[in-house]
Length: 124
Image (cartoon, rainbow, N blue to C red; front, side, top):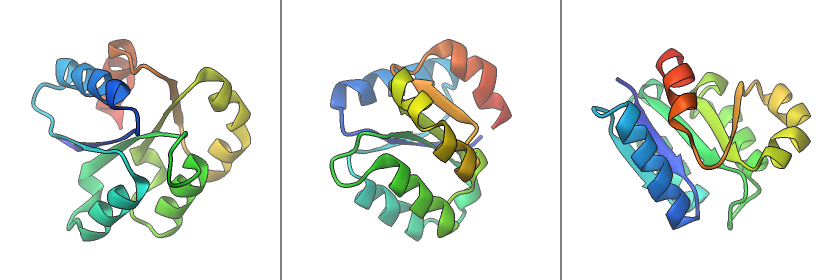
C-alpha cells in the first residue's frame, strides 16, 4: 500500500480529503503538509519515494502549484504518475498544457471524492 502525501494550505480541505482517503483506503497512512517547502524537505529525506502518492493543491502560499510540481518532477523526487492535482475545475482546464507537459494524468476538482479514489487510486 502506498502512503499518501496531502499538500493543501486550506485546513478544512485537508480534513475533508484525508477523511475521503481514509474511507476508501482505511489502511493507508496520510501525511499532511500546509507548505510546499515542508513537503519538499520530507520527500528529499524519504528513503523510498516510490511508496508515495502526492495530492497537491495548486493555490499554495509559498509557491505556484505548477512550479512546485515541475520542481518535484525535475528533481526526481516523484514521477508524474504519483501526482494528483487538487484544484478548481477552472484551474484544471487552464493548466491542461502544463499538465500534459509534466505528464500528470490526474487533475481533480476539490473536494476530493470517494468516486475518484475508488476509480483511480488503486491503479496509481
